[in-house]
Image 1: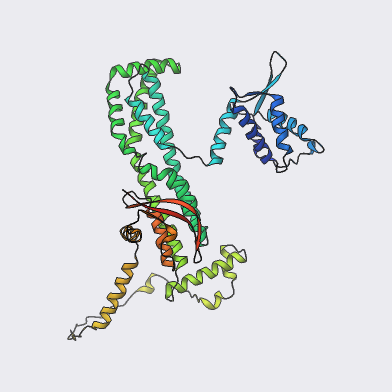
Image 2: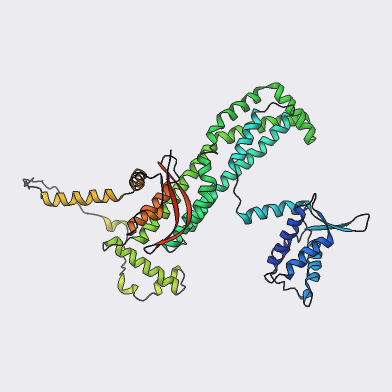
Length: 459
């Protein structure tokens, strides 16, 4: 890589004026992208950059060379710097007109950086359907088709691994959110929007690998057993890569087996993605419920103590070791130590034989009132557990004869009502539910702030 890219290629993106450099690179790329090639007359680009520097909201350059320079001077200086760093090249045609081109490697890097900035997600269906179409095609260029299949399979597997890693990143980030609003914002406005809606949901429905995998594997296995296919593909790959036919033949067998193994082992990645998705959503809901609910029992009191400690640590900007500097802890918790001399200190001397004398058991009538009270509390606790079936039934009851309704029309008086709305939104992504959801604008009701969504009956 370092033989292709100039040594200081990334210097503009690490300089104090990196924002200006990136704005100018994007401006130039936009202008050149609309042309037949990435070459544009220098005066045209100078005019575009001059207009950028004339804007009041343009970022400022801190370079000493530019003190007192006007916008046109800054534009020419920027082009010289980008040429120096290896982003662009300047050529002069027969009419002595200077034209500026982006370097080939710079175009690839700019496109990648723009995709990262835009949060572009991989279209799994595109890769899966392309592979499916390629293995089913009958063509005179089997070698080229196989190379394209390998490339698309590699991009598909890489995309799935990235999705798997992204969910883990969201799980790690969850512990940094301190309020219910932050947790719900991370879950619904970030995670569900960027992971569930854009990738995970399609992966289970329209992009489902299981629809295409059996035929893909079957056709590839047939090709691997076809001597005619192997020889034709090897001859073509040998010519394309300029390698001996024997070496090309070995590559053909390796490519076929790698693709087949990738599709057979894809279930492991998909299973881990499913597990992490369930883990993240469960962790987010449990953390939100923990912050929403409170009680006078031991759990509730411990929660209040931990929240108080967290607020004190954050307000005083302590690190985790600073918890021992909080004064009231010395009276709140008493810790004592216990030790033993050696393993013989646990020795229990023999006390001789003893005879067991059984005693009669006294029959006691069970306290029916106490029993009924315990049973009532247990049933109440079970009723409060919100399963997908209960949420589905709850939505059916709220919809009544209507085909659709807004979440803001659901009951919202208590924290429990708010938790139900969260579960309605969360379970609305599942295909076995009787309803689906669609996002609307933000609402505030009875002190609860959330993005409203449309609840629509399926079928």
